[in-house]
Length: 254
Length: 352
Image 1 (cartoon, rainbow over the protein chains, first blue to last red):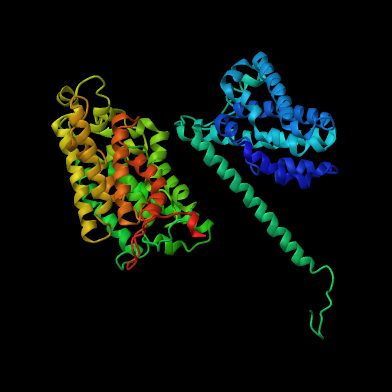
Image 2: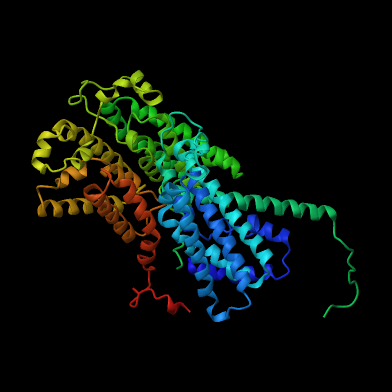
């Protein structure tokens, strides 16, 4: 997983120059460069803990805090860290934020903390976070970096929650069960039993179901992109060529 | 790694059309279906009907979405074959939604998502079976018992079978019994001799019924061999390796293992050897490859039966060897006629 971070680093360098505008950052994070669907980073927590909506949401929020915090911190120190030691420095920053969120979850959402288990400390190794720190935050001012971190995390979380909802619906026939683990006692009645007497489909609850669910989500995104591309092509064809071209009728082009 | 380029064996086999091959394989399951219906009642036939309808409907739906010729692909009988293989593999009184899930998953995910007939790396029927086996362990472990042993003393009537499949039959527990493999798996601390004399599923009547089922599939498989639809390599390698594994471990530890005959005549041994492992799309293509492939499945079956979590291991064995099939094909590439045998083997680096 570490390797893939390097790859995306190079790739996303061009489109996130210092003058990246905010609309582009938002579009990149949520759709075009979505960490879960396009970069395929952070697969390990994504496949392991998205068995219910609440697990997915919990991990998504934790990742969001770490990503926003680390992007801001990395952006603040970007001019003072030598290039050679930048990755260790970034990892130290990410690790401290992860420790913070781990302690916070231990204090306020203890049961969820126990369910998510090892995957909270493992946020440190989530390549999406290190990738954003290196590719964006280390070469951009604070505000764009914070927005980029937030949007990337939002894109990640949306996919996590969608996958969690799919697996919970297919696996147990419910939605939003156990939401009180995250939102306190007022959320205890949020559980929505979609199918009564539902036989539990263990396959969707187990990790193989996550692979297939993620595959379907990626296929869905590619389908929508393809349709959009076709629509743009049709529109371009309707508009006609923008300028008439002069055609050479004499002589030979060398 | 460059994979072998093989002309599709599933489209032209022995000069016959795909539809003919698929029809013959379907017909070859008839002895097995008859024996199963005779032993376990109408459930198998009802399952088959549900499975066939689901298979045709899901295949047609996906073909329509993919904008392929629906009628042309439905007429090659491959979807029906998948449905038939699943229909006989599932327990006779499994609820209808289990059959629908298994067949739908097999056709849509294991076959059409990969590009339809000829492009699926895994055997669709076994993918469907494995999915429902993992997802619904309780209904999948309820087999009917033979009439001499079970509490009620007769087989389910047609109406009772329908009720068990589509609704809920309260008295169904009087008809169900563990299969011999399941019974042997849960013998716990008993040694083999005590197990065979005390556990109901391991009595002669139960063993004989499964012997009949396996003999029926053996007959169907021999017909396929005679028609040259399959070659002898995969089934012979599979059965021989299963026999060898069972013999070796039975000689080492006769108190805790079953006899080779038990392993060959219970569960899906014959059905798997002749009907599942010989799938031309997902198995190996070279003859030496088929031998390795079959033997690998048998070793996996024995391992799963003896030390795994499930009583029978044909589905998982076949799926795991499907993974290995391209690799086996790569290393068992046959020598071109008229060329010498390569002395140095295939070295990737020397290609350039």
